[in-house]
Image 1: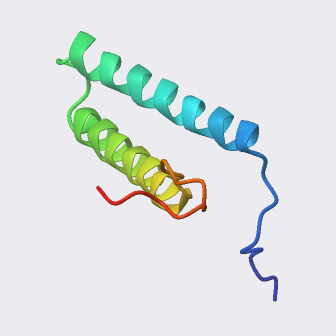
Image 2: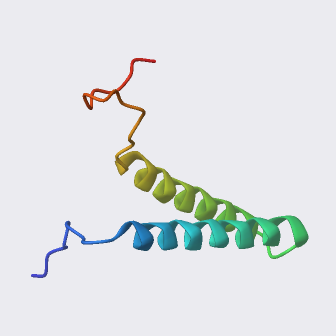
Length: 80
C-alpha cells in the first residue's frame, strides 16, 4: 500500500506561488457566486464550501510560517 509523503522541500518562492494561486482561485469563485447568483441550485453552496476549504489551506500555510520579529543586538526578540 502506498503512503503519503509528509515532508516537502519547498522554497519560500514556491510557498508564495501556492498562496497566490489559492487567493486567485478564491477570487474567481467569489466572483462567480456574486455575478451568477441564479445559477444551478446547490452550486453556490458547493462554491462557498470550496472557498472555505481554500481559506483553511491558506490558514494552515500561514500558521506553519516562522515569523521573525525585531531583535536586540543579542538576538533576543524585543518584548511587545
